[in-house]
Image (cartoon, rainbow, N blue to C red; front, top):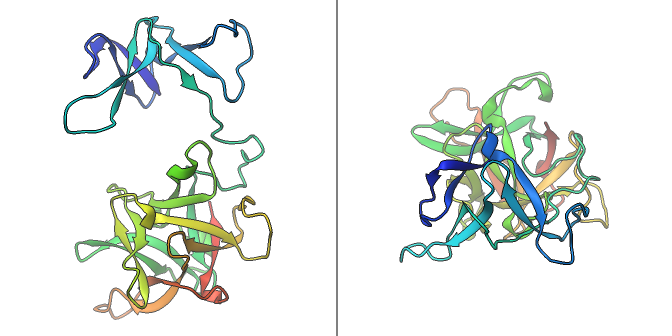
Length: 274
């Protein structure tokens, strides 16, 4: 919750009050929406594209933006609360009501990827002091019976479409506290495998693609459907491999995840579960 702290000054602008993100919020989390332009009046409906002023009900101060000039961080601003703030806020669409369905995958959803051909889950786990993204053999009878949190991934919306929860996204491991993301190891290697990184970049962007032909690229992906995962930058398809990570084990259950250009391989097919 965006919360105004009435008794704490902002870090950069000492005239303003501190604004923080809190898990549960408080009295400082309530804001009144006021018109920014003079041709709009109090009581008018707020619509997409409007520019508004957000005033704290608790302190009467407006949600404000102050440019930070510290000589180190360029283009950084501080969000604070300032009396008579001139800062206007633009209303943009994050999620269409048509897409807001429990059965449709959206940005922020936590999902699992089950490899349909090999019956393995896409997993992130530590092995010999390093994190690896791999396909884990579970020896379970059904895909839905797997319960490990290490096979949970959060759909992270691409910055290019940051105003709306779409299906073009990065994948963040939900269990790892280090916020691990998967990316391609090297564009020039053959074969190409997925590795783990802490930083978000173009290398961590993937697209969900339906396994059936369609002319609608933005078609929603339902939970439980078959889909393919494509690396956006190289246009390679994420698929299974027989390269084991845990070669020192008698029974190998960790296999590397590869990326190939062939779009017709059955090893590129995944089932998505919530």
